[in-house]
Image (tube, rainbow, N blue to C red):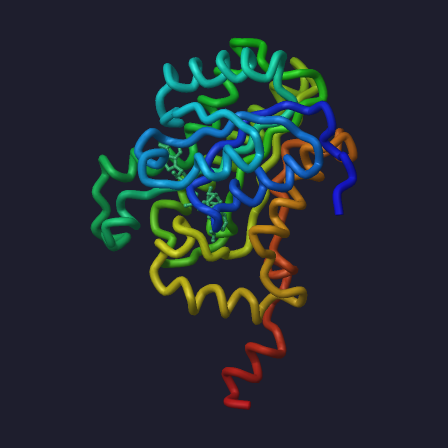
Length: 271
Ligand SMILES: NC(=O)c1ccc[n+]([C@@H]2O[C@H](COP(=O)([O-])OP(=O)(O)OC[C@H]3O[C@@H](n4cnc5c(N)ncnc54)[C@H](O)[C@@H]3O)[C@@H](O)[C@H]2O)c1
């Protein structure tokens, strides 16, 4: 059911790779709620992914941008304002990649050039997006910027490797830039900390299926799905959350505040 929560709002959605992507589901929901947007992804992902199918479905244009390249981001933001006919009300940063995780390097044997890439792609790119938006005066007042994160920024999940550091950087940037953008333009900046979700990025983490099952059994409401996440993002882009800013918002079915669940106790005690 749609409520027109985003009628008249314009934005940019990063990170839709295929129909499992959180950004893909979000694009569908934002469209359903009346929002207009430009879709973007890294040039290589555009070649390999299926973003044009989504673009057709939601009537959006696609502009390639490597989120680590300020030049690409400048082009993306200025072209998006041209295409959408005005400033932006929302941005979704749904980007994550670690060469160390992808290539199976253990945490005691990290390649540091790759670690810097992880931090740049998955953390610092969020700063780059906002700095470019600020310099181009691209955000409307009361706009909303959201990035997706994971609880490994606060607690250790061994196979998450250097992505844990990248997410800590990302969440910290949301607070620092949230203060700045709030003062400058009344723009709010938040991160949403999502349950494990079966996507390309998610499944890249070792032992993902067990991980998914564990989180589900630990969460009184069960794991939040990509579609649940898309709904939450819509609310965060809507005018119903104007004073929520600089927060890391847990969207995890209760996982983060559960010590142990009956399901896990039963499983461990063989019941
Ligand atoms: N899947 C999970 O379990 C989970 C849980 C919590 C948070 N998240 C976060 O959600 C976000 C979206 O991931 P997803 O699970 O939908 O997976 P996904 O693989 O569908 O999306 C990740 C996206 O990042 C893009 N990307 C990688 N490098 C890029 C670059 N240099 N420039 C621009 N884009 C680039 C990829 O092309 C891809 O579209 C990520 O930040 C991820 O860390 C995922």
